[in-house]
Amino acid sequence: MSGPVTQLIFEYHILRQVIFQVLEEEAPLDVRERDIIIDSIEQAVNDAATQFSETLRDIQELFMVTLTHDLRGPLNVVKMGTQLTLRRVERGDSHVDIAARMLNAINRLDSMIQNLLDASRLRTGQSLKIEFEECDLEVLVQEVVEDLSFAYGDRFVVVCDSDIRSYCSRKEIRRVIENLAVNAVKYGASGTPITLTLQQTETQISLTIHNEGDPISLDAQSILFQQFRRTISAEEQTGWGLGLFLVKSITEAHEGTIEVESAEGKGTSFIIKLPKVPDQVA
Image 1 (cartoon, helix red, strand yellow):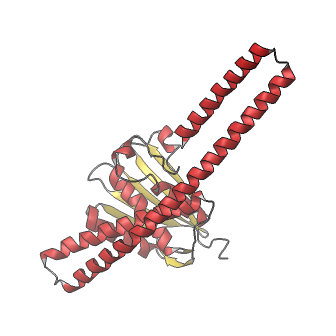
Image 2 (cartoon, rainbow, N blue to C red; image 1 turned 90 degrees about the horizontal axis):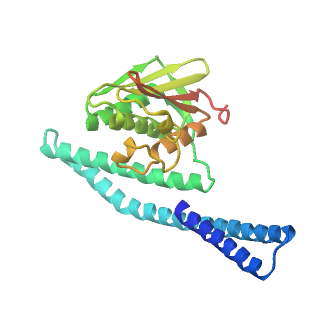
Image 3 (cartoon, rainbow, N blue to C red; image 1 turned 120 degrees about the vertical axis):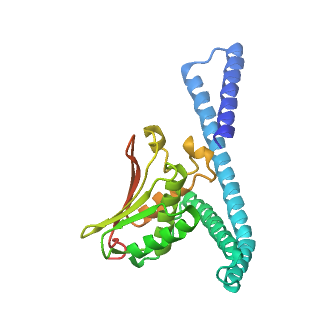
């Protein structure tokens, strides 16, 4: 969007120069006349840029919602067919592994579509719909690790205090954990452990996901959680630059915070802090 808007403003600047040049040739302008012309042109630029941005945003939203809606139908058919195949084949059959990997890929694609829909809602000023329930976070983390280990191997280590429970959206917090853990696989040092640490105080729960490898620069850290923004290293990976933006949005919808710590020789840690009982539940 910035390209067309920049071009629009550039053309208005040229228009202003031409207008002044023509008028000066006819008769010199006094200060008041010049100010009136400048104000009129700047208002026209502002109105045109605003209208252009709103129109483009509406087109983007319509395209995104239509695309994701149309994708959901055939994707659900494939998902149900794959689940049925898994139920029918016998254990030990070589097709079990293939079907399981297909189902895992379908779930990731479905998650990407959901990310697009949620990003679309957030762009239009809507909030994420969060349904709070009592969650056993240790069980949730272990379930995520079990699923990811199937795709990425036994690299995940869970360190957890006992009996960690909170009120949260189980589905959304699972998305947060999955996204950060998969990012750790993508950008961490190959073959090194990825550690998920759950700790608690009387009122707060902390989840830290740590990976070894090259640190994230301070410049890159400044744009990590921005929508559709990707660091240089991230451009080599597939994706739309929505994951961390949505992680932050989900965390904040739970009245929590997220921060990143990254340094040479220490790896990278994403730290999520959540209240045990959010104010909107208490």
